[in-house]
Image (cartoon, rainbow, N blue to C red; front, side, top):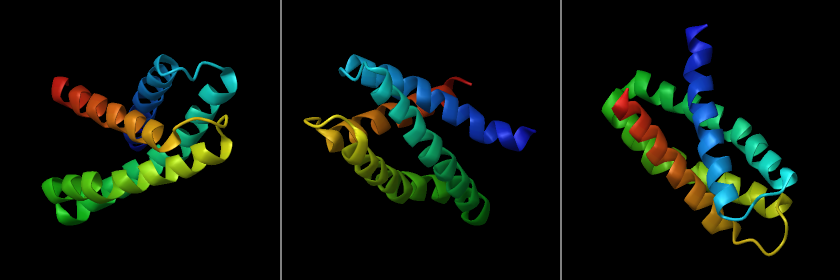
Length: 115
């Protein structure tokens, strides 16, 4: 059960932060919000899993560095591609993906620092 919580906690935090941020940025319709939830339900657990594998195999410090330096940019790009394919036209989707992920990462860091 605790293994599931390692994936659910960051996923829930990410969805809350990114949906709220997207809403503030003007993505207010249900379809766009639902897309943000689906995209994060796909990318966040994979990111957490690969991050945990890295930290287990090469240590906490190097694992975190690789997560932020390699895995997060891959997630930004993957989410950008998904948003570009499915969001309403006319959106600046790369900037959206980058902004939402930056907010999510900073929120996660703040969360882990406070707890």
